[in-house]
Length: 157
Image (cartoon, rainbow, N blue to C red; front, side, top):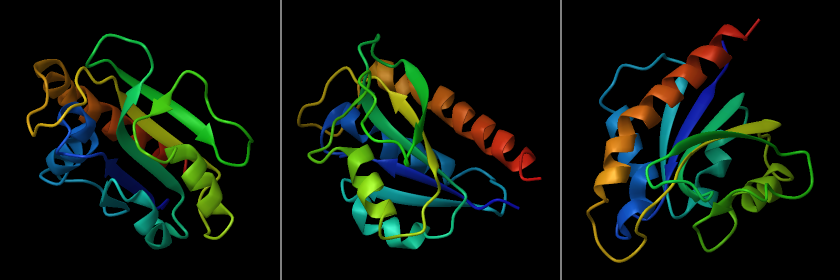
């Protein structure tokens, strides 16, 4: 059975920027398959990458600016072995998320692909409450994560 890691990233003190962590907290309350592990990456995803050695799939939940309506949820597949980053998506973190993971892949045994569940933020400013648009998107985030887990688990053959 494939080992799957789901990571919620973001800063919960910056309104919609914390949607990855808030979504992960919701996932923690649900029954997930035994092969799925949840990790809160917060703003320090590099700290947890050593724990991900040997996983078959990484799913990252994060606020991502891709120029859509706030609360829009998109799924991106990123091949770590390819150079360059996706031009249509911009991480909201100080250090580019994809570049960080590509760098870490040179050190750790990480999968060739990662899936990013990106949620378009409305407000990234000091505050602990997310906007209504982004809060309402969390069920769709959870559904996309569940669907992705199911798809990859069924392709374990």
